[in-house]
Length: 346
Image (cartoon, rainbow, N blue to C red):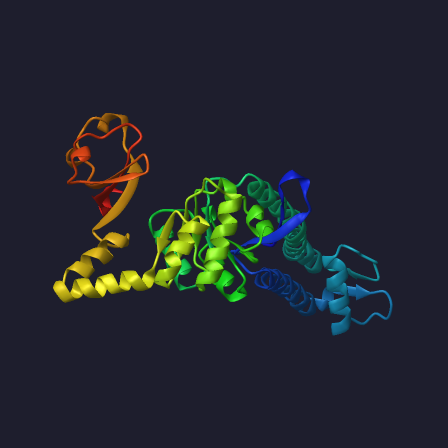
């Protein structure tokens, strides 16, 4: 459903956010109209079979056209009185068969009006309110190969698709994202207005994968300007652009070409290294890497004493401490750790 997203501060509506409908509008309307016409057809057939019980005050003859006419004025409760049931059987048919069908047809049309006017208007209003209060969501800027894989992995790890907002200029890509249940927006992510519309400053994380390094770096620069405190992960494919992405404000820079090279090199020195790295990266593996803050109970313990998994690294005051370094012998309040945990433990 297309929803006008109101910018902060009472500004004019910005870009449009959409979410996939369970049933397309044309299919829903077609099913309703088909059901209504089927019921009307049944009434026409019943009246035609029992036409002897009807009386036409105009010419005394009941033709098929008269039956269709009588059915329509009967279904719509117009009732001009020029054709009327006169036999007991005809009146019983009107009471027992036609009246329930008449009510059903009226419910179909009333339900259609409710669904396409009242319900959808309410849905637009409800979604607009949700958008105005967007927080702790994940914004995916670019839904190419990398973006699509990232979203699929997020959903596999338990992230609700309704917490994911995908922005891309391609309608075909947005259609694929909406089928996953994500909120989607067609727009240019290099523009401030587009990112403001999805409250990027309140997001949990931003994933940038525009397909071109220059575009990804520009998007990162724009996103960092609007959301200075939000983690931004950016995909670049040229090694010399990694520094530029970091300078643009990326918290994490991912180079799929370099990572592929690492996997291939691992295969050269051992057949199971690449397999294990893939295992770590995917929710489908037996283990996975997790980054989290330590608990109060873990403060003062050694990194090797963690019971939730195998501690690998500590991030402390901007420093990175390996598990082999002396500082890893005592965790401190506020430390962020990277550990390997079994997938079943998540």
